[in-house]
Image: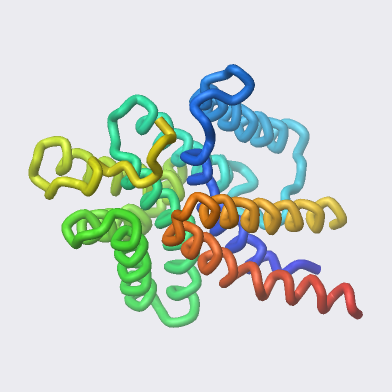
Length: 199
Length: 55
């Protein structure tokens, strides 16, 4: 039997690979790459609808996810939304890259740390992990501090119809982007373009 | 179970390919994050799968 706990964590961290989107050319087979975001999201939603309708058992899902939208749908929705916001020129590229990788790693880390060493260590490890990832991707201290605090705060509330996999992507990027757009935060290197030539 | 194992194999391939693409494009920071972040749960998962297969 597969260790479902490790399997679930691995599924979560693999989601960081969503950032490979920025290496894609603007057009794939003559179709705008942004269309593929919508197609991918529709594919994920279709799988979820089939899971509900046909009662398909997916290994790694938690018991409480049986009768509600699964975490992978929330995460994919969050990542697709972030990529869409980038395509609409509403958020800087490095915020999107940092936030997707951060959410993919920080959420399972908080869960694992809290389970083994308690809630406080869970929060502290979450803050350290998210800060480190933002620092590596965005640089500086202002945005990594804001992003990591908002991300960990967004992970905590347990709301049935609003998953932390989505909240941990949406709220940090909104906070950082608003501060950046209104000139409250510092300027970004190369205006936040980390992967050049994708646009 | 067989489908799950194939799916896990695909996840490993996706991780390796994405990391390699970022290395080729010289975005080493992203590549290292992808490799390290996925190795932490990926290694014990692979180990457990291989052990079960060995038995």
